[in-house]
Image 1: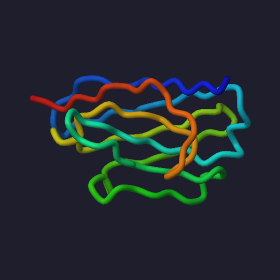
Image 2 (image 1 turned 90 degrees about the horizontal axis):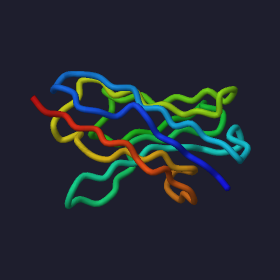
Image 3 (image 1 turned 180 degrees about the horizontal axis):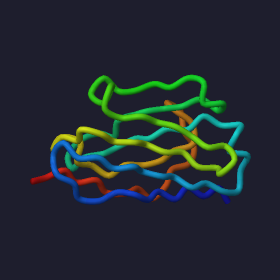
Length: 116
């Protein structure tokens, strides 16, 4: 069964940084686009960033452009999300998913909390 395991979340002060990782297994990682979603309490899940199978094309939510960077290492079957200049409104559970706007598998999520 497809597995997606996120890590790297935590508590950080405003302006701080985190790097999220999503280790995958049991599918041909290099054949799939990947993305990160987030969901804050009381809000709908939103697409944060996506990356094509080769890594050549990326897409970002307007709210994170210039602050977050998605990348992947196809040799390690891992996708990353670098979060810089974090703001309190970035607080959410971050999920790694297989696909972008139409995804079929999702990880268990990692909590990111931005607070002073």
